[in-house]
Length: 296
Image 1 (spheres, rainbow, N blue to C red):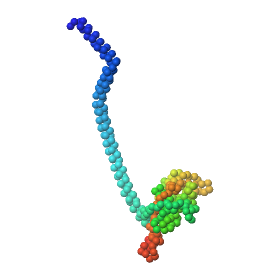
Image 2: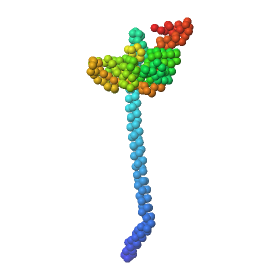
Image 3: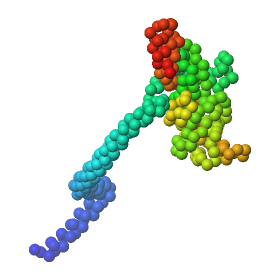
Image 4: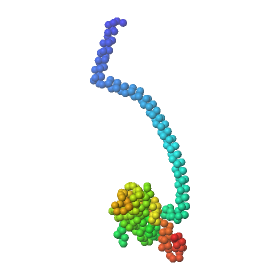
């Protein structure tokens, strides 16, 4: 080939390049085309890699989840076996407790029948000077005198006086209220006394050699013969040695919001139910005779 013709090839290519460059400067079409081509090429290369990574990561995550599920399943099985063993022990302990209560003639909380009642008034009538409320139950419907009154949070008080269909409940905050209690954690006994709704309650007769912690829950001990054992009553606010006696000065607050009572539960005892039956039945009736037989 003629060498002169070979020289025309670079010149033609140069003019072609300059023409394309000038055209691209005005239109930007080649830049956009190259960017789009680069993105498509990058996507075509990266997408299979991302897909493979997702598949591998998902498989690993599912494997780890299955291993965790298996471990959790094994732990739950072990926990279920432990609870099954504990349940068997509790059943045996309950049977033993029932036998001991029968031998000692102690009241069993299981025989108490919960009955719902509505608070219909605060202080009224001759009991207006007391910390009390009036409820919609009387001795004909489970509200006999002395019946414990509670809510799902704890002790409210006891029935002080009952008519046929209504009753007055003496609240645990009344200065005349006394409840035998235990500290739930240390089992320290004492008597919880009310001082009015505006003042904390006092746990009396706790000597210095006993331990009661602030924040501890006080539960009924059952020793007063009114409340069954184990019902929450109050939370300890403060504990301090007394300056005047050998007993500690312990303050507590009720667990129940006394100011906002709307519904309560009465724990009716069969003997008190018998009293109500006897009071409402005519003399010589079968109900009267059965109630008298059930009374101690």
